[in-house]
Length: 196
Length: 196
DNA sequence: CGGCATCCGTGACGATACTG
DNA sequence: CAGTATCGTCACGGATGCCG
Image (cartoon, rainbow over all chains, first blue to last red; front, side, top):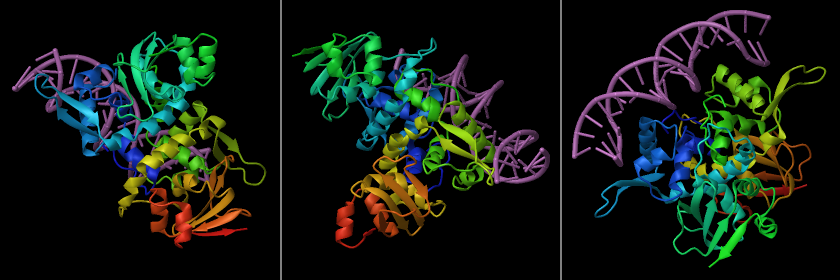
């Protein structure tokens, strides 16, 4: 906690002591995609200032949410990755995303977009497709491992995926908002699934 | 959002634009117990300053999370209560409380306590007891309506409860942390349930 | 060039005092 | 009782500098 504690003997308040600071949960969202370097984090968190990002990462290390690790041999760069405790924040992000999805109806010109930001809300809708799934959106490509793998999702194409899901932006939005199911989307052709 | 928006086309970031400010989710926690007056909110949110509380309540009205309503006839006081949209934040608080429960192992002398702060994490463990349940803890009494009633829980005793659950502080902690189930607690006598 | 640390202007926060 | 006013402090965001 970089801000002061709430000093309340309450489970929710204790959680907010750890992850209630501005940017912290969005950093967790990024790290759920796997280990990332400082510069990559900064690039996918538009608006965060360099000192705040560095400060939050230190807070997260101190709280046991993330670790800093040196990559082996030739890379020799530092990466940040979530601990097991940090990965357990996925249900928090899922609940937040579920609640916030209706607000995606308004798309503002100032909004930044990354394809993998859809991974958390989409993962719930992809549960009927088991294994490693590659998702191709207008905004880009990412992959999801359904059935509780470790890093849940990652940026870019998957390595030998079990299935590939393709759809356009409106379809992705409707799916995330729960307007229709994956099966319905497949039936009327808005969602295409190719199985390996 | 009183702070600036994250400006990200991401469901979780949109949610945090609405409820990511300091104190907002704890105000929601209080209002999940039903309509409350300003002074009562201030009393059960130790540490919040009067201007921040007033500011957050206005933000929440503007965001459609809460409404300000004048009580009828003799009371003539204003109360704040959640909208349907605001009540949908319960899963967010549940996920946060689940994640934060281990941190309750450390009980600090500076911690404030209210009995009804246990309602959110306890509600999950009480699902096997249907209906209106009165919970008696060392810290006080509150009640929970399981099976999706409207205000979920409230302070103080219940009006004609279907069941009454009594336990001590350690037992409550263990239950919240998932160390044992309600049934196990009843079996070894740590939890007492009286059915009407 | 990646990974921060420093400086600075603005605004959010917390405490107290005050008012209808 | 239900806030508003004031004020000192600290956190945030942006820019820049430094160092391997």
